[in-house]
Length: 217
Ligand code: GDP
Ligand code: MG
Image (tube, rainbow, N blue to C red; front, side):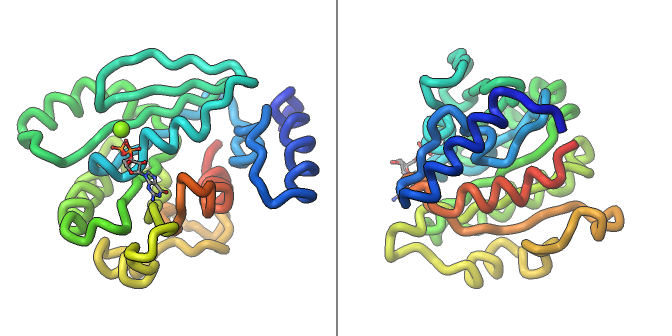
């Protein structure tokens, strides 16, 4: 692993973090996430209102070089160092046909994507079936067939959020990769795992991204 400024920054913020319960994203957000990789492309997907934009903004920090072109209201991008994050809304009122057109436009991004972060609003029980349908479509997408999936059940800071077991049932994720399973035990199985989180509280984010980062080249 090469030593970059980000790595050094990571160590510093980690040391700071030991002394304080407040997460200091400081200048080492990629280190905090466990992502040291060059040219990693990570796609944030999920229904609207799941928390994708909030997560992008959380990762943004003006102490690091950040490039945020406005592409489309439901298509956002954040570049930190050599890691590119893109967020896209799925589902909603958009017709399937239109969706397919958009997928073709995204093809260039999809074919080189290193990881998918699929975010679900753990409060929005009514839309779990829709969230599952979109997730299932992604999981059967040929362009993403080897792509690791981190599924985030977001907004657990609110008492009305469902628990992990119920969300696993609702999304059909009862048989996942394992939070502690090592990548070399994957045996060609696609890594997919569910973590509960609160983006606004920065809870559960670090652990889950560190899980994902093991599968990035
Ligand atoms: P997007 O459509 O997926 O981009 O969702 P947004 O990031 O715009 O978030 C939708 C709404 O959910 C906003 O009002 C956010 O403030 C709220 N939200 C996002 N993350 C959290 C969270 O962790 N907890 C709570 N309580 N609200 C959140
Ligand atoms: Mg958004």
